[in-house]
Length: 441
Image (cartoon, rainbow, N blue to C red; front, top):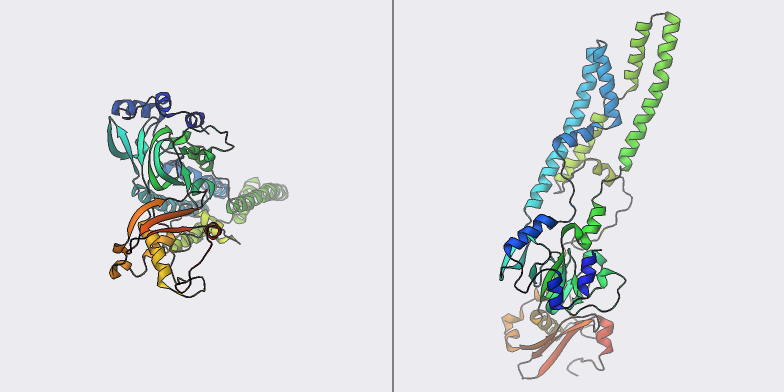
């Protein structure tokens, strides 16, 4: 975790800006460019881009490919062009097919990445403007609103009803309240800082002005991403293929010299013994194996592509097929990320429009992003068609927080009465209830 982030959390407004060399009017464009040259672009660790030559060399590091290439070269050197040509063709077709398939998948993935453009509202030279996320530097003043991605590790300067979703960091589904006051308590984890937002999280509701403290690899997310994007260990498929290849090599290391010596000593024709031993080595080698493996994996990748899935590394096909149990976050992954409202019942379990109207009003009038339940309720028959919503007026709102575990909207009904509509964790709502309404009573 960046020491600068922890230090910034304990400082007040003016002291904070001075420590970062910034002002309320933000940085100048010239100063921002100078800082960017010093700290680099605002990007977390990325998967290293490999050139075609490096990728081809990695594919050629396969022990079976090396063995076939060696035997092919020996065959050519000893005048057996037919055997050498067959093995060279198998090696070439295997490498070419795999290289082409993976290069095409990588190009498709890069095109998808290029379609995503993330910007942030930053104050430069006293004026707010939208710039790409990668151009932000420490000391930049940014404006945050509902739906915005946090562009770096930022310290809140001012806020209003700010709630941030930190699920990508903590797995917690509920948003966390963030304030601008200096942090005075000791925290066991940086995520617990109430005045700091971290890159990779997003604003759920409210607005804020913040100053960027850390960017790119220096952020909390950047330190985690650096470990995640390290070179992958070999898969079970790679290890199995390597074990088989080394078994063949050890077998040849024993058989070929024995055949050569026995044949030479018994027939006294060492040249013929050498060619016979070479023929044994070629016979023991499964020339078609690399080709068969590449064809089968490529066929799997093509089948996945018809399901709109890009397979960047062909070995992933075998890994996916070898799974017994696959655990994944299902929301929005295996489902449509959508909730459908089927019933709206009172405490007796009977459907009533009064319950739906109360739910509709609080979902309609609340500020910030609508969650899945809000969208499901608002997709029901619109009370605007009946002219009901227009008769209500919003007076005030209490946003969700983890102390109340509820959010409330104060509205005025057509009769002029003020009604506080509340939703939240059932146990918290029940604890505040002393009565319930049923059939008008």
